[in-house]
Image 1: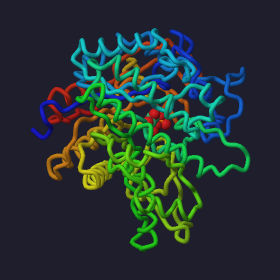
Image 2: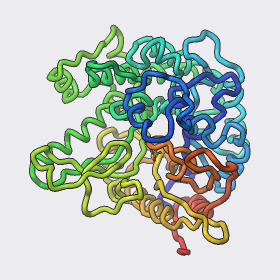
Image 3: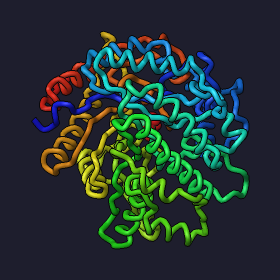
Image 4: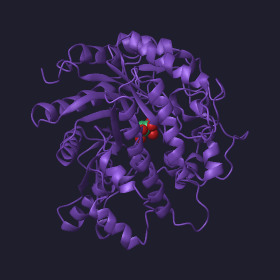
Length: 481
Ligand code: BG6
């Protein structure tokens, strides 16, 4: 058998796209709540929003998500039926500290997650918990400017202390920040950043990233004090960048693109700013506000494992060589079109071998166990005449990726803790706010404008994944149709 007996098969979600119940249980208003569906979404996630509230013209999908808040028992029963060993959810910060800067946590919020974790444990499912997944109280943005402000480190420390203490015996695997490198691309969701005219946005993003990395190291320290068995991971939006041609200028461009994303894990896993980053920041005139003790904190509190999302590889070219190649979409960062790859309906290129290459790169670089915590295909699902969804396209994608993951483990010796597909149950898309971009094994009756019963039904991939888990990844077969 390729995978160890205790390999953690499962699925992944995030509060802001899944949970809903935005004004229930004493929850405060979060940044993602006020991000609408539609064309105004992009400027907001790029940090151009001024008015952090709802208006009557837009539809706000995070308000309801797909209602995990009320349906968690039903959803957990479904994933238990598939045989999940783990389930990734995130904490809505605003459920625990509605404004972020209170002294006392909100008991109702704490109780909600306790109920969820107990329900998971009842089914022998290991919770995998992201502490922040594109999520923070609006109050922390309005009052403090989000993660650009060092004070956020203290608020985050307070949050994690409460979580680690309360769930000491219910949770083992934690992730400090979802896709920490996304701060450079989705600064509003990643760090609550709103920019003023004329500000040096790059500098602010690096400063906010420094605060998050310090907070992450501090969380690791606090975690080990509370329960030395806790496993703390960082999380990267991964996907290797290839050079577009063998022209060394393109190769160098790809190297820079890869360094730009590994920078975050370099700090969180090796414990110090890498020289290439220090030199770059110096050239840009960006000063990172290191406080006394930061360097030691980062060095002494590195992560236990490296988790990452993988949807696609990227392609990089030197600006001189750019004209000929068209651009395409991909996990928020647009990239060049790779003529060897097919793409999803949203233009995300499909590259299973790139998954194996990415895993090898990361394992070689960090020599720590990896955890794949997102992978999957966003696709439109249309029920057939019998009302069933025959999602062979999704199975094809997952089959090919799991096969390459097996190769990475079996043939390359990569150490891997587990694999959670994105959006095991259909949920709202982070980049577009759509429901029609579906990832789940379970269909949710909801459309892009928020109509629908929210009822759950199984897709064909439900039984397929069940069998994959049952056979511990040995049997990936699918009979089409
Ligand atoms: C990752 C995020 O970037 O990709 C998820 O961690 C997100 O929150 C996922 O949903 C898929 O992206 P999208 O935009 O298709 O929802």
